[in-house]
Image 1 (tube, one colour):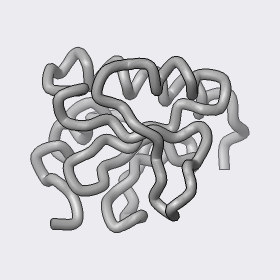
Image 2: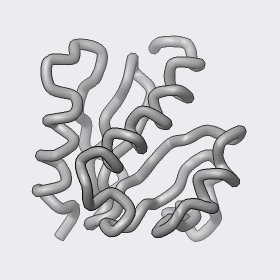
Image 3: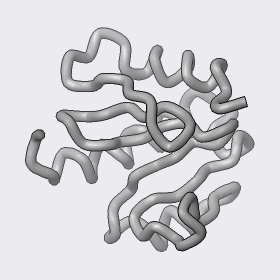
Image 4: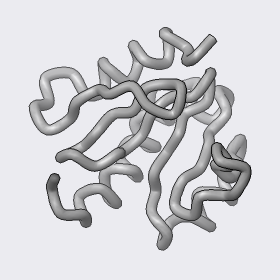
Length: 109
């Protein structure tokens, strides 16, 4: 299973009616690009959250998170959140908001 379609649908609902976010296949899953920069996505059933280097350690201290080690090496600024960490819609929206704080700081592509 490349990614959980149910989680994808939940993220689509979060970004519904937004013209600054597009969906793109990558990392064997899907990513949501905010202003052309990767914001968040799904790999298998985990949320891939781009929180940026400043929020990285704080994000890792939250329950049900782990380092994103897609390449075998941790990618600083990215975390995986297991499904228990975003089971409620409010939790998912909180993660998306954290990701958007970082992507808003980047130049649009």
